[in-house]
Length: 575
Image (cartoon, rainbow, N blue to C red; front, side):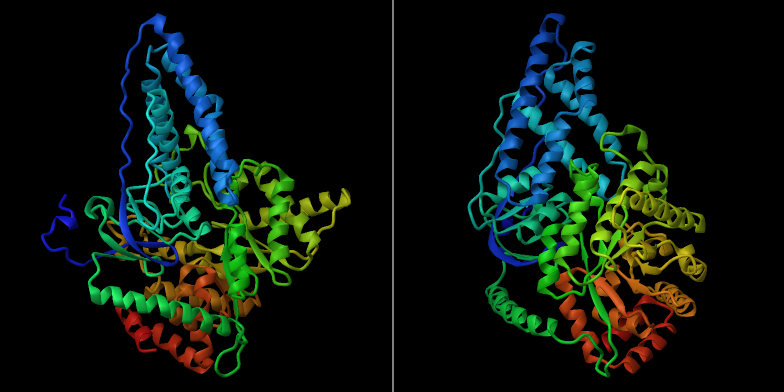
């Protein structure tokens, strides 16, 4: 593939991706080529089996020592947890057994045996979606490092400080290792904003863009780059004019930050005095600082999947309590809405969980009702922490489809509350249990569901995906995915009206709420509680404070008449 640097005169090129970690970085490109390690051995004789087993065991020890050392130097809890997950992977007895079997019974050399067994796992993981699919990079990383150690290869590149790292994909270990070179930014061909690399980049405050198709193939070494981690754009070989524009923008960012701080302190009400509430979507402890900086009124969506997937101590109920209490303490006196695990598959190396269509499969409440010990453990941890901070915790149930699921959850919560009280634990008797509205049938039956629950929270990301039958992670049809689609607005309106009729609070925690004009439309529908990424809160607040409720009502009236997304876009552009 032709590189941009192959041009006789370097031209300015704009690339787009998904903004994974905010910030603007300017620097030369450092390319990182991830290559599958070479497999030197294949079949061995019986008298070589013992030696190959020793090579494998030694590689495990060396890899574990490397990860232990890296983990010991980490200040970031997320990074430490991700490394611990890889350490646990090395100790997985099923993994050991399978590799030893390949060596002893199939006469494979150690490197070939490792490669064979990991490939089996990866073939399963690659057919998954979302967070689980993204974990395949973690498995590949462990495989490659083991094979490198077996074959006495170093495999540790170095980068010049201040450069922007361009890679096809990165594992958590690589992000942590490379950050020690003081890189200015990260660009990846692959990965989503929920990938481990993106999570770590945010935690380490390294500007990052992911999902930039063929970036590692088209960007040349040492080419000058401007990485815009807010817009998700990269300028390769920026012209003098562009550089000047970004220099000015970097100055403006500092000024905007001051203005945003002033805006955050402003009262949350429309231009004609109607109050609204803006809360934060949060997943990690490191993000709590941003809740405070942007003065969000609590957390409208506390995701818990990362605890389930990353933390080795997660099955320790008290460790879970510690996390919830930390969040509640940091956000005092505001409420925190804890979403139950929204993941599928109950463990990492479980080959039995393969599904043809995971998005429509065993996930969210469907998985939790099959995994009662996991569900009850999480609920007990939430209920115990809520007892310490009464009146501030709400439980949010994901992927609900039937009223039966709601009744089971409500009964389970009551049962666990009684058990805790019998054990002299404080509980919040009035803890609220709400539902994610993300499956279209729940929106259509919103009034029925609202009568069975304390609140409804619309997840516009999945609701859009299911309503339009578009896999939002599928690049071939991503143009069909648009949360501004007229059908999405009509469905949201149905939920808002059901909330009014039943007196059930309705909020929105999907990406749509962080679109400033969409936020005005939601407020016009009567949904006055919105939750979003904390850094996006000031722009939404600015829009809501600048318009009257009457103007927002009029916007809703016009939007509901639209028949195409283009018409909605046009209305929004002129609002």
